[in-house]
Image 1: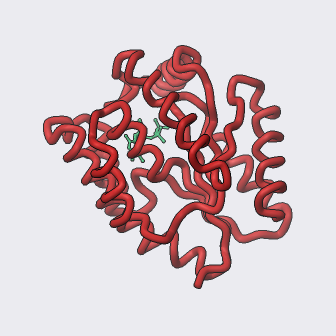
Image 2: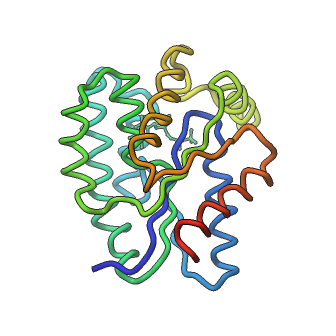
Length: 213
Ligand code: TYD
């Protein structure tokens, strides 16, 4: 039995998920809630190790299915060690990416069959389904430009998935929008091509509307 609220942020590259998760956490804390901010892949020590392995491109040779299994292993650990305990304590958990990213990156864009994606979801997510998923939608060209600017500031190159061709990123966007269409009770699409404060307002409106913080 969990009494907390579980919110996930999803979208393509450079959509501003991390910033929006942080802004939402601040607002929820100001309203008196206990908030846990986390991300995928990662969130736990072991999960962060798998993250490094995946995003450096070292796991690329496993192929999309092998990578999906690794994302799933990290998620299983994350859910059991961090997410479910926090929800049981009554916390709000804000997670930067979750299982919809596997459906989009490894499934729709990577070619792993939907039945396999669903099987992995049954293993790692089970009944820990988000109460709300905010899909930050931005055209891939604009998102990739933002991601490249952020990388340049940090003096780093594109990671495993940022470096994929435009077609890959277009498939991601289409998949996230389709997920939102198929699960309207869980998902809200937010226009992420506006100023940060505008996106934050839309995010807050969705949270108030769906979860009454
Ligand atoms: P991201 O939060 O975008 O990291 P950063 O903001 O530092 O670039 O996510 C990491 C990457 O991992 C991103 O390219 C999407 C990818 N990813 C998958 O391919 N499958 C998954 O299941 C998850 C959670 C992430």
